[in-house]
Image (cartoon, rainbow, N blue to C red; front, side, top):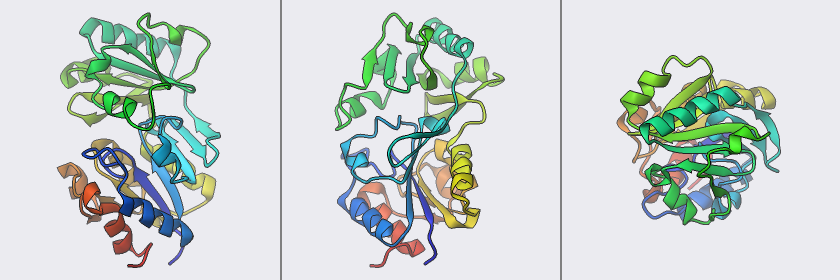
Length: 267
């Protein structure tokens, strides 16, 4: 089979959110796909330095992180980045304070918890996983962005109607829903799909040679960019409807079955 670029979302796709692990079948099948000459890419809202030991050991060739704001190579060297403007960060902070929203700002060296971390639905799981707590920094003064530090992305949890009313027309920031009240915040135009397009240009590959796996709303843009898309069995309905193929759930060997179906590995 001709070399393919295989792009995987993390939470709910590679990473089983029920058992908080990467299934052994997924690890083995990705290793086999790499041995067969395919390029392995991770695409996540997570930070490239916050994937954890288990994901790091998969040795991705490239990492799309921070909701498309950052593209790194296998040495975690930044190939492309998009930085949020200082005034836009202040808009986020002011909004979070006004509406008691959960807010995390993602810098190039750590994720700073500005307020109401208990509202961030993924935080406890990640902090108690093999990622550890050292990359998460409590910042009750909400002032780290005022220093000479680049903010690459953010995460905010609040009533979606209020978020959309405040930011749907924002000229420089995009808000991508990843759960009922959670939004990945990035520079406008930055998505997993836009970063995938940048990677395709970097690698000089065609759309038909790119296959992506996903499960949630923030995977739609990369599904639209890739030539072929696979939805996990545990994916939301809209992802399943858009996908070319629906595999089984993450904890039911979904990655293995998906790679087998598209011919990147053999049984």
